[in-house]
Length: 512
Image 1 (cartoon, one colour):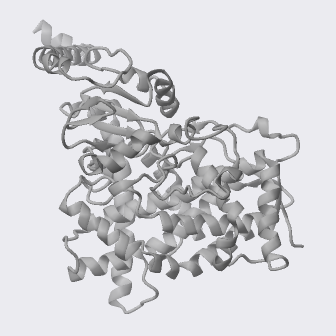
Image 2: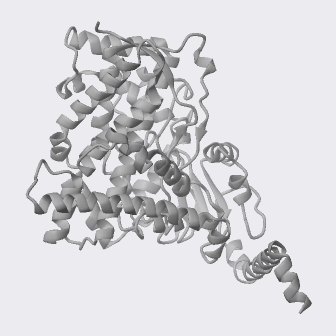
Image 3: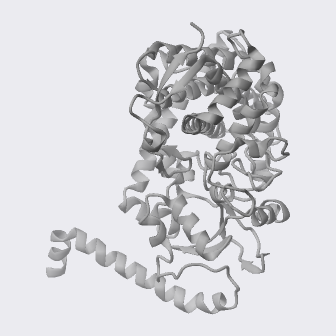
């Protein structure tokens, strides 16, 4: 009776005792069944770990996990080992070893771990980014590469890009001579462009952007999927996610996305049944495939929603982050800004509107984009891989079921691969064959191998046209009294990397 009363009056103490008992049980199991086999393995070097939590304390105590991983790599080398709770983890941070993982051993490392967060947010991983390697993944990737993101499909959306770039310019013009919140306006451009291509219409008009809460939805997604939550690293103890509130937040965020996608799909089905057909967007294509069963895999409605989720969040984030960081770097480097503007304006001369046929001529601007992606890859740590068999990497044992992270940000700043790696120098890409499409492992913002992002061409078109028009249409400077050294460049770590502070500028129209 006294014990029952103690439990009722001290619930927090009871939870503490419960946790302690469970952790002790896990510790006993670890000591009895794991230590002997671990001694036989030559694992990569890494920091000293604690019982139960392993090396989790290195990450959970840090608000800048990507920088923590960078610093650990500086100390232990381009391959190091972390025990993150119950998850054996290897982090790769050199081009040489990234090539070994994503090319030499690509098949053995191209699966995905079943992340707790992805299971909830991505409709039980019924899409491309987080689906484990297998027949289903190969089928939905084929749909994406051949039906959704092909060069022909990307070209068919050129009129949308042109219209949304015009809206982008118009919004900036309206703010002059005052200060422009360029980050917010670029965010609207990225969101509207992707929404029109993927979902059939934009959501910035009539207050829909705020009504649906796109910004908070995307922020929650980035934090939940990309952050290092303790629950992700104890898969046998799902209740930890419940006690920490992680599961509740996942469910809330999922319900918001699910409700939104239900509205989108219902709207498409209604329009299709009434014969109100315009050019097909990506949802139309997916619904046609699902209805006709014309592919190697059967698409459920969850599959359709999961693939839409991939397109929506990945497309919006990649465009926004690259343009936002690109403009930030240009404003901090006036020489580069002037050189890029001179190139664009010398080709266009008095013509005010950039056309997509102009883009191949802007070689220096393309070098600016490459340099931006080198220093600021949208996903600084690529989505985790999981080994499906025992491997030897650089002389070290990598057991099956090891989680593998590729640190694209550190690889992009590796002095072995890059001269003056922390300096913004687009000239390094002039007359260079290096690109970001997965063949050059010193520059892999979108991954490589089987798990390379299938939407590179899709995102590239959205970024290039917008940046060229921004360079051509405006003369840029920071607000009065603000110098480049005053800019807050701190980032929020998540699955993608946003700057904390918005970029505010003075944008003087070049054409009166």
